[in-house]
Structure formats: structure tokens, C-alpha cells
Length: 598
Image (cartoon, rainbow, N blue to C red; front, top):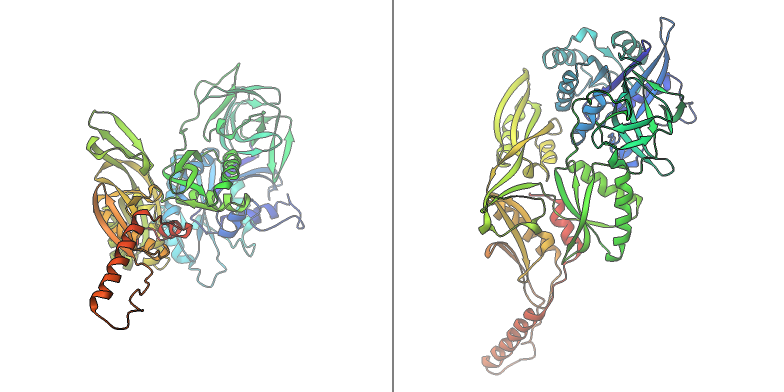
């Protein structure tokens, strides 16, 4: 056990985490040059294109150190986005230390701080690593000062690397061996292992990624999950070296996988504790919680005959993504679909892209919504995330919406524009502090509903790309919630309904009406596009009619002849308006969603 090191790499998005993982894998020769490819731990096309890690991976690296001993280094990779903070915390709970990666040109950013605090909560040994030192814009002295002032770490212990140019990789490996503690645990104690991830294999079922803290696990053991008491017989255990390598057993301190004929990923909850059924450990690992979705949207196929393919696609996606939840939904305008829950907006985008690419589907998503709590007049509590389920306002006593605590790090001269952006989104400025003479951390409490549209894009644009953002959910607060309905030619379109704060209702309704006016094709009669709260119209735009000049044939005579023809046309248009149906093109739904609230 003294020759094992379990560690993770944590960083803000795009600070070079995947590239450093690549170099560590190459240096330890577990893959030959012919089979190697960049971002080798990122298995999805979306991860490669966007340069982000969505699904964390694990790899076991054998390394012979300068002291002559061979060490087993277990790298537990973590996702890099705020949506997946819980997965990061479970990966960190499986480690004894972390490499805190900082970009030499960007410096300390919001998630650098957030991930540092996560590592500190787990009492991990932290090694600061300054990456991208080969860039012309690299400012190593400034970053060292930030490590000292912002992070409270010793800058003299920071390792300088360039993962892209393979500079300082051996120094990183030596630091892992010499500065990180080896795992501890009693080999003879009852089995106690933490699930930090899982994925689905179509031949073997769910493959559970775990870290063993005490005892040992061998094929044939009957194991039990402590959260749901499910019991399984272990078929196979082993370690990850890009491929699965079989072992006779996994013992305390080791990181690996087990296969036990588990049919669904949802049975293996991230953060759960595994023990032996006939010899259980006394108490489970701390920190386990169910992953709860915070953003909700309905997904419909563009062509109604693709509903079966969408059903099959979601079922297969659910096998590899236990945090995705969905249930059947239907809409008068869009037909049959599914109401889905996501961990955040990035998670929503990833699911949408994977469905469209991997299953060749064309999809329409309704406006993202959050989960609201309603206290009814009879004292009961109702939780809704779908505008279609919003009850009669007369029966509602109070409404509550989720709030987040947002940490925003910016250069200080953007303070005014960022403060205006947050206050426009109904934010409450709690504190701000200068991290250095020209860098500022602002803490805002914001309604989650105002953040899920395009807050991050707007922040990047007003700070010219220098703003960084991290958030966590805090509580539910009293709000003045209304349901905005969109009426086209007097008929409600349920798929376009939105739940919004009363102060933003007119603005949101006006925006939707403008977008629809531009997208709905002209008819032979005028089409009114209206936004309404209950029976009160709060916004209106009109799609003008095709005009036929019925007076063109009147080339003389009394004005009453022309008036008579115009009156006849007016009656015809009125009758046509009563019976005419307006078809809303799919592009209209997409136009309403794409631009958020601006």
C-alpha cells in the first residue's frame, strides 16, 4: 500500500487538464505511440470538439521513481464544468491529493477557487502546477503571487510545466510520489468501498468505478449497496489502464472496477458505499447525496414519426447518464415528447447534441425552466417545473423559486458592467473583495431562472472573455411568479408558455412576440401574436396580411363602388380569420429559444 498514490487533477475550464493527463499517460508507457491520440481520456466527440471533460475517466499509471521503487499512480480524472460539481467532489473523496492546475496566462479563475475549497474540505494534499509556461503571454511571477495571495498556498512549491511541449512532466510525477501521502486502511476490516463513477457496457452491464478504503473484494463475493440495500455477486474485478485489466482482488488503497451483472446504471449511485452482505461495515462513507436536476425542458421530435427513435435514444442515453431523468409529455402544438431534467444548461446541450448525432434525430426543445415551489390556499405544497401544470392563480398563496450563490472573478475595471448585468437579473450583491490590486471576486445571490438562459454568454461578452463564473444552489425564496401564455390568432400555444417573474413578464412576452412575427408566414388575413397573463394581454405584434387590390378594376365612376368592394373584402377576411388556422413553423420555436431574454 505504501507504493500506491491516488490523485486527481483539478482546474478551471481550458487550463490544460486533459493535455497534462495525456503526457502523464505517455511518460509512463501504458500506451504505444501508434495507439495514442490527443485527449485520450475524452471518449466522446463533443468532449473533443469543445475541449471539456463531461464523463470522468480513471487510469492506473505504473511509474519507476528516481529512488528506484515502482509506484502505482491512480489518476482519477474529473469533469471540468460547474454542472458536474458533485461528481468532482466524489472523485476527490477517493484521493489523497490533487494537482491544482493553473494557466500561466489566465491565472486563478472562479473554478480554480471552487475546486480548491472542495479539495480542502476533503483534507487533501494540494500541489500547485503552473501550466502553459511556453505561451508568449505567460506571466509566471504574477501567477505565483496569485497562488500566494488568492489561494494561500506556498508559491515556491509550484511546479512549472508545459503539457503541450512535455516540459516538467517528470517533475510532476516525482512530486506525486514524494509529496502525496500513500493511502491507509485495514486489509482485514469489513469491506468499505466508494463508488465515484459508473458506465454501461452492452455485454457486461454496469461497470462500477470504485476506490477501496478498507478490506478486500474478490470475484464470488456477495456485495451490498448501502443506499438501496441491493445485493449482487461479483463476477470480475480489475484496474483501468485505458482498457480493463483483470485482477484476482482489489484491496484497501486500490482504485479499480467491478462487474456484478447490474442491469441499470441508476442502481449504482455516485457516492454510494459498497460493503459485503454477510459482513457489512459499521457506517457508510460521508457526503452521499442523490444528484438532483435543476433545469427542465421538454424534448419533441420535429417529425412526429420519429417519436419511437427518440424513446429508444433516451433509454440508451440514460444507461450511461444516471443524472438524466425523463417522463412522457405531450403538447397540442408539438405532439408527443418527453419532459427531461438536467444538472445544468451544459448538461442539457450535451444531451441534445448526443441525441441528434448518435441517433440522427431532429429535435425541438421548449424554453428551459427551473423547479418552483407553490404553497396553495389549502396549505398543501406543490412542486412544478412545467408551465402546462401551473394551477389556477386564485388557488396559490405563495410562490418560491431557487436561488444560487454566484462567485464571479473579473478584472476590476469591469466591476460596473458586471454589477449592472447581475442587478438587471434581480441579483443581490452580498460581498466583493479584491484578490489583487486589479482582480476582484464578486459574490451575488441570483435567481436560477435568470441564469439558465444566457447569463454566462452575457458575462463573457461584457468582460471581453476575462470573467469567470461558478455557482452553487442555496435555497428557495419568495417570488412573484406568473405564467405568460402566447396566443396566435386567439389560440394558446402551450409549448410556448413560460413561468417568469412578474417584473420580467412584459419584456419576455414582447421578445417572444417579435420573434414569432418574423417567423410566422403571412396569411390572407392579419394574424395577432399576443402575450397574456390570464385574460390580460401584455404584449402584441401583428403579422400583416397578403393584400389583393380589389379596386384595381374600378377605373372611374362613383367612390361608393370602391367602398362597396372594400367592405365586401373586409367581410371575407373577417370570416376567413374565424375559420383560418395558422401553422407555426418549427423555426419559430427555435427562434424563441435561441436568443434567451435579449
